[in-house]
Length: 193
Image (tube, rainbow, N blue to C red):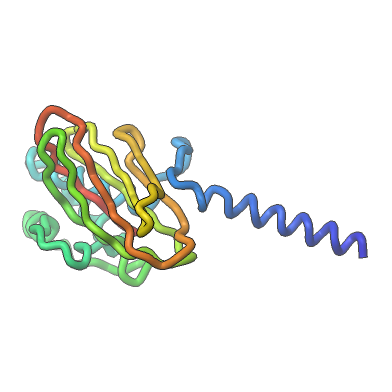
C-alpha cells in the first residue's frame, strides 16, 4: 500500500512538473529549439527580405518552411497574403502540404506607426496549447501582449523575446496587441498556432 502511494505521488509530481512550463505565459528558455510558430514567423520575415534582395535561394528556403508547416492566412484577416506572390517567383513551389496540425498555423502581416499598436481578437480553446510568435524585417522594437476576456494580461513579451505560450483554462476570445515602441513605422508578421 505504501509503495503504491509512493509511486502515485511520484507520478503526480512528475505530471505537475511536466505541466509547469506549458502553463507559463512567456517561454523564457532561449536555449530551446524554436517552436513551429516561431519558425514560420521567421520564415515569413526571411521570405520578405529575400524578395527585397532578389535572393531566390533564401526565398525558396523560407517558402519550404512555410509550406511544410501548413501555414495559411488567419481567418478574418483582410490583408494581402504575400505567400502566393513569393511562390510565383520560385518555379515549382506549390501550396501548403498540411503536415502536423490539420490546419497548420495561421499568419497575418501588418504595419504599425511609431508609438501605435495594432489589436485583434482570436479564440483559443481550453486545454490546448496556445502559441503566438511575432517577427519583423527591420528589427523594430515591437512588443506583444495577450489579454483574456476578463481584461487580464495572459502574456507580455518584449522586443527581445516576441513569443507567448500558455494553456487556456477556458475557451474564450483573447485580445492580441502588437505595439511599436520605435521611432518609425514597422512591418510585422504574426503567427498563431
